Length: 474
Ligand SMILES: CC(C)[C@H](C(=O)O)[C@@H](O)C(=O)O
Ligand code: SF4
Image (cartoon, rainbow, N blue to C red):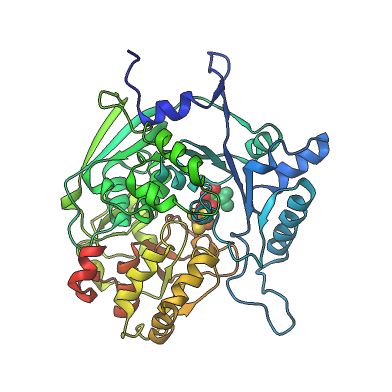
């Protein structure tokens, strides 16, 4: 009998081309390479310089997301790019994809969206695959039982040229969420609670598998939210064993296997979950039932606490510095903090279920005076679905802005950003100083909490705005 293996071991073993040695990392074959406009230009330039071609354009998918405006073209037909550099990046990727025969979800493509949203939506993200992208939130795709991680621009070049990447095998960690979530608590709250528990570097050097009852109960959208934030705990890889929820999500999608191939694929995918006796270098448990709707109050994602609580008193110099920047008064309720702007979007929380959750809170209510709320769907497909069910009308009637898909205010590269000093409640994944504009104070939260803050005009508990059914569904 062979030794029991984890999901991660199985994914790793089936993709090793040359095993790791003391002198050299392993060479891993990559099944799917996702490409966007920010981290690819230099990689393509190196190919060009060295006269190389793209080894497997058929395993490469490109999209435009970071630098694209979320406002439509003006009367002159021109898109309102934030900077010349942003526009140049977009045109550069268009030219590179045309030259090397790579499929690009271009500006007019009905499937365009954030790179970590479109892979799953198209059915390209599948259990058992190795998936890379020049982007740290590639861990999102691990929600499907794939080995997915972010790579640097040099490695983007390696993968374009060889379809392989050099990697040392990380250690393994299993994070088990014990018990069921309470009503009104969602995947973002799980992610923030987990990061608060293990720290922003708690997962460093590990490939993390998320397991347990509360993880199994999550929809694919929720699983993506959780795996998306593995990197905010320092882990480049986050993954969840594929199951019936995974298969039901993928069945019938454009690039998923069809017919007999589908049956054969599902049979293979059923073999992927960790063997019962598989061991991990580190095991962590999180009490899922104790998790409450969370927000962050500092400038690192592990500075997270229940939204109904008080701001903790800083305990050291770096916490004092963060507290000064964020201006939450120690030992005072978070709810006393006035909110200037709300952003609902990003590869963490811009899928249909997230928008429904936010709409549930905003329906029939009005965004508070002085608050700007921006709602940015993760893809064109999500935008279409949301509009088909009238979510856009819920948002605009509440006084929020409904935009075109893209990364938008998550990283503020496209002109969508806050003003210095503003307090922004954001469903994205990073609250670093200046992430959403110079001097902007970012508070991370889930979609219901962010929507509640928009309505209340200050940090607010979403439960007061949620119907019992909505609370149960979240
Ligand atoms: C632009 C890109 C390199 C970056 C990343 O790697 O994550 C961005 O997507 C982010 O979220 O900070
Ligand atoms: S939405 Fe934000 S986190 Fe996600 S890829 Fe874009 S910039 Fe990075």
